[in-house]
Image (cartoon, rainbow, N blue to C red):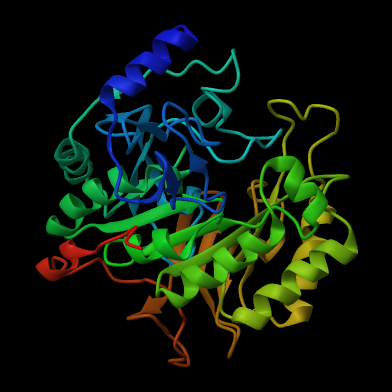
Length: 368
């Protein structure tokens, strides 16, 4: 699909967005991500998929660019419904432009001439019906940045909650207070990428370090189950100083936040360096444990990181969840507790049991 045709197709499927505020003189403030774009009539925000038409903010609605079923460990969530299937859906667009993006065909579709992903019209209920058909316990907004498509995600999550499914985001964390308040009644799990601890490099990716740090804290305060991932890229964010700084920040929030340090493989526009060595991941894991984090995982190198894929009880050392890659080989958790010493293990261990109360449907965003 040509880029111009794709833009036309997206605009035809767009709907009015709730995460907006009228700033007068025909300008709208988008509240979906940390850029807080001020958008004049006829223009789009940084993400290129939210735009001002006639004084109303429009954005993505009623389609997917990707829909597939994955082990929840692939997201990755290691402390949420282990061994279960997650139905994953994604749209187009992103508020960042990372040179090593593994989902660039969808996230950069309106920036890069080579990223031409087709879209498929679909109803929210059809996504949930699919999830139930394949036996998934959760639905996840991923593949592009979900914050900028939050209104559509909430439409899907309403149906998911009615079907007693868990809901999840895989996000860059560049959030706002308003989008977190909007999501709070409907979102259970939130995986956030912390791409480093250097603001200059973050700005090269399209964001700022501080807002992502604030975004992690926002998500945790909102009551979402939060797991954090750092893709460790050689020569970009793999210094001892930076890895220690990330670990120190996370442990200050909570020593129970799972931190995934994962291996980079050359992709998209970053093919000028090799893959992350095993030793680098193990070094990062050691820094996390030394800082006081109780759950530090090494990923993307199945079977090569020793105990780094497994969950152990921090109190007695019992092996609770044994993994290889995205497969759970053995589990010894009982109602969220260590089977041996009964210590509570933080996480989201049980499937959702009830529909969200109707009153949360009245959430209002964007009022002065």
